[in-house]
Image (cartoon, rainbow, N blue to C red; front, side, top):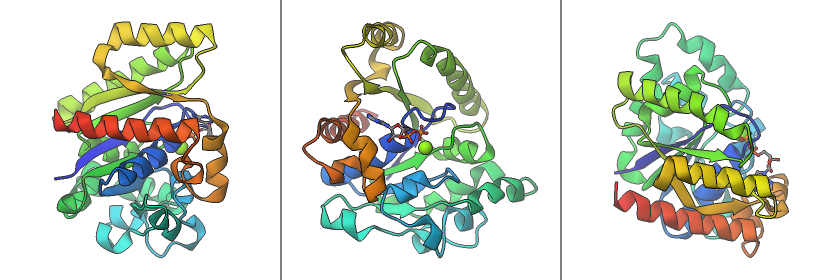
Length: 261
Ligand code: ADP
Ligand code: MG
């Protein structure tokens, strides 16, 4: 049975997409079967997984509108497969922004992705969903089918403030739509231990959220930022870099955590 995780945070630019593609590649590298679902119309996770969003025949849009199955719509990047980090991609592009509007009049519109993923449950160990930076119908579709939420966050002053909104949202979805949903963990990303404020916020996070804070920290590392322009995750682009190594360690931490779930 696949474990499904949303990578979510209402803020943009906090590292959701970087986390999604590198965790996907890291999990594949340690032998897990992974499906990555891009739920952001910007299609960054699609491009960052080596799939050209301008040339899609089918995408997550078709799946949400039930004109294609996940099996029919998902694709793989040969580059990632060659590197031993291959995973399936349910891709997205601008078209997905329209799904939001088109789904308004549909029945059980927030459960569309859940229904679609049920058909491939046996094919994967992990499904990772890259969410857009908003609490839209798209994000709701992700939260409705997930077992947990991974929240990437930078250890900055306002990070804690934004977190309260996200925690409330997750509580509401848990109460009304998805009893399985829980925050699996907070992932400290773009971390720079030389910055005192970051250390302080990191300590506050641990004091307040305890073991919900992942042990692994993702350092700020330029190789992770460079990788998308080559159409691969950092884990594939430069496996020896600190950022790539941190994501492989994080993948192993996730594998260990789900054994306890
Ligand atoms: P989001 O999906 O939340 O909008 P992204 O993953 O696209 O955020 O990250 C925002 C920017 O920060 C991107 O340019 C990305 O390359 C860069 N970035 C993300 N994580 C790191 C990191 N650990 N080190 C350096 N740059 C990073
Ligand atoms: Mg993103």
